[in-house]
Image (tube, rainbow, N blue to C red; front, side, top):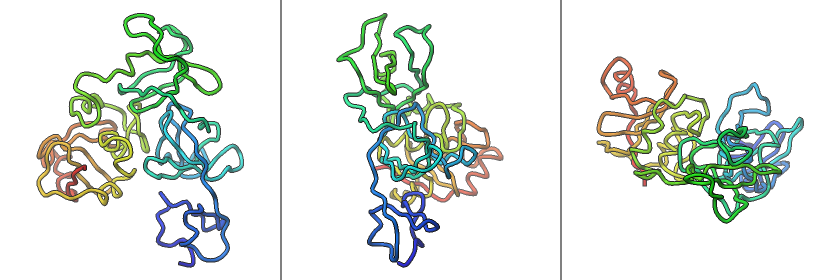
Length: 289
């Protein structure tokens, strides 16, 4: 191939205008290119916004959650970087101060939809950041300091420390990933384009959360291509539409993050005006491994 045609710019780091590409594409490109070697990094904020271009006014394409593995491909002017989320290979542009090169180990994982990082181990202390299910925080102590019923984890945060209530790291009754009871705790979460947290989700961000870390690619069309199709859905199967995806609760009811209601809702295929539109646009169903 002489140029970059045929490569998916969502997951292949190639900039034909600047003739810059990641080193993994060396055998797929011809001519003179500058090749980039990715460097390991980890998200250092509760939610690191990846944008379509190095400009705050461009659309958010995805988010990296605190402690998630990333790759930095290139440092850019004005404090931006070209980066990738490693669990799904998705590319975007993030502020350079939003990630760290220090791995979050040993770490605790947030097991509830939403939580906060506090400046001190008390609920009246100032909040430093918002965290959400799946965030991983490097701990500075072997166990939570006992202050009340659950205690507090002392965690590294930027160049200092923060405190996470230990209740946020306990698996709730009913479990988490692929538990319908847990999934329904995300009902009414606001719809946010590119969102991947309980502070704001888009449709494929919700299905990624449901599938678990590293199971699904980022966008609805990528997810449909990755799954085995099924004719009749069961609870937990994904339903696909043009540019949209949801999680079936049974053969007709679907939980999904949608811009029609601007939140996570349950809708029934073929029922109501909106449900009828969904049924008419249905592309098929897919089953998770």
